Amino acid sequence: MAPKTKFSTHRERATNPLVWCAAIICTILTVAVIIAGIVTFIGYLVIHPRVPYVSVMDAHLDHIQIDYAGILEIQVTILIRAQNGNEKAHASFSDSSYSLSLNGEVVAQLVAPPFEVGKNSSVDFNYVVPSSPIPLRPDQAEDVDTGLKKDLITFDLKGSTWVRWRIGHLASVKFLCRLECRLRFHPLNGTYIPSRCSSKAK
Image 1 (cartoon, rainbow, N blue to C red):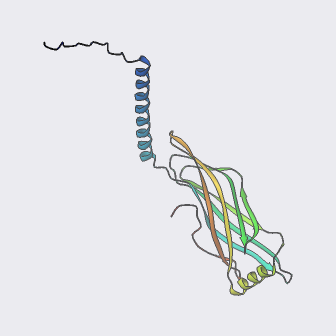
Image 2: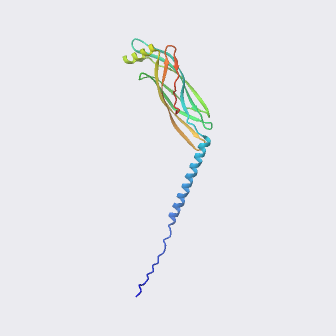
């Protein structure tokens, strides 16, 4: 006897409308992200934004004196330039603060109020830094005395400033410009020995 053939029927389950809605929303979001990425990339190529930076342009050791008791007195002039190389965006600088130290002893603090730098422009700050009489330890006083005899005094300058600028209509960028370098002088005439001192990447 031939086996009976069994037929089974079932209804295909209909896709839940919520699943369709979720798929459509995900597709729209994916396309939007891709378009935004393309627009940002094209905008970057067109605007070609440059990170603003700060640099020491010049300096002068106006006065340095140490007495037999190890009391140090100095006055230094430092020219710091804030540079904005963007042709289509202003840059805002804030919280500018730098410390000047000699042999590990902070002798002065350089600060500036918030300021703006125009498109493709720069702003100079001419800091005249007098210090109050600073008592040095015997080893520090000896190092300063040795530097005076060798006609070479080295200061450490360290600090930072926050800079914010807008990349066209795409976004606002905030960046910390760090400045850390050594400033060397000939104390006999106060001249500055030029060296690279900038937050700009090499």
